[in-house]
Length: 237
Length: 247
Image (cartoon, rainbow over all chains, first blue to last red; front, side, top):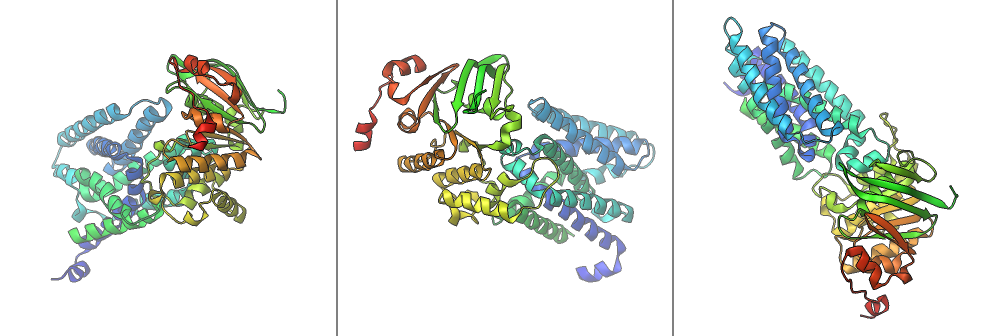
């Protein structure tokens, strides 16, 4: 059976494809920023914090996605606060978040009564088991990210390229940086649904790095990264 | 404050953490002058600029730029940063980087107008890099990038131009070109140049400020070996520029 036939026959495969493409769009819009700002390590820290958030939400039987979003935004803002408001080095906090997020996540998931095969699916992703409800969430996050990036594109680029100059032109650089971190964290949540915690970094940076070879602008890099990401995910399916 | 003073420092102490880099500095930049700021590494040249731009709050003392607090006046000045600070691989075109000068302040984006685009194009042309507008900055030489950064500052339509080491990464010929451009700009705006290059500054500036924690100002002609000896804490050989030009 060829891939298109299988796609027509199985709803789960259609969901998987939709989830993959939605994730590719998110990583296309945010990946280039992660790359040029060199915040890959930070994105990794957020990803592990997200696992912690999902674990806690899972244990208290809230929707894991809500826990993921909450943990992601919280992690992004606390790192941003350390880095921007206090001018400190965020590496230590990221390192701590990395370990603590992982530990809390695994602990809570494994202590949750009942059958918890989900643990592995958070680590490695569960693209074949994505439910339509989650797809709606992912689409909403994508729309939010794309909307903000489009609306504030020049501002975000200016603040990324030369922070001091942007500040002198009266741009709210601190706010823009925090917003960018929050968007990175949302993109991480998107990607975890599909490829899991372990591959988040890869999908956030590799398509963008590939696109960087021929794209002359950050915008071009976004489209390229989304394309490469989508290609890789479809190929994987 | 007199209308002819565009930037004024009064007893300014500034630095990072508890160690002051600048100590009790008083300086008045006059409208239309070409002030060169020289001094040893770590002497406080860049800190002086950062305070004047409002990027660093002084620990003590008062600073006024164009009669306002630096943070308020910052949209009326142009700034050319040290380009070693840049990520040369950043995916941005020359035109895009210069247009950043035309962004409106605050959160709400404003559509770029024809006036914004022509101001950017004009600034690029004036710096003789108009033909590079569509290039990614990764493909520029050091001298080209320096002129693009100058164009970006010009696109702000500034009253004062602050430059941090504009000749640090370019060869001697490009140095001359850049200082010629600065002299031309000086006819319509005040120029403040921080540089480690004593020869250059004394050749082109109308006044020279020597910074090493403290600050003293000199007319370029009055700069003799003993001033440098005090500034750098060691004898400095001063080469007469007439001989330099004849070489």
